[in-house]
Image (cartoon, rainbow, N blue to C red; front, side, top):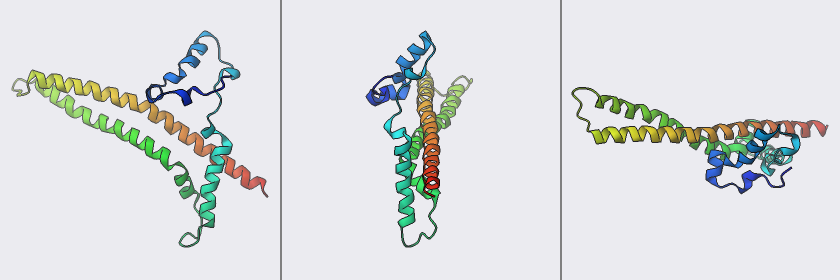
Length: 171
């Protein structure tokens, strides 16, 4: 089993395009993967760390005096994951803006081919280039967004399960 997770050593380009998984894919192509071929869990994805973080937020809600009478797990969860939600929100916003703007350029490019078009050939090339660029950006951003969304869901499930287990085991 590898000692250090390659995600920790990867630069942002490698993380964006998942190049850090290349050695694992090569190994899996050559032979069936076994448990000892898998990378160790990242510290921030381990049950103890996630449960501790959620429990800290939950304890803040319980010990808070004033306007909060009944602590809310939803608010504790929101404060537990807000950074990840914000970063995935930025990614999905970029993707959606690209998907919304692309048809505008497609429309302009189609207009170029009409008989009474006032669009120059250079403008048509610019529109085509922008369409390609927006498509590349949208696709490049989608996969990290999907990965982080799945990771977020897993972390919330693990943290809630760990917190429930801790609370039940104290009875």
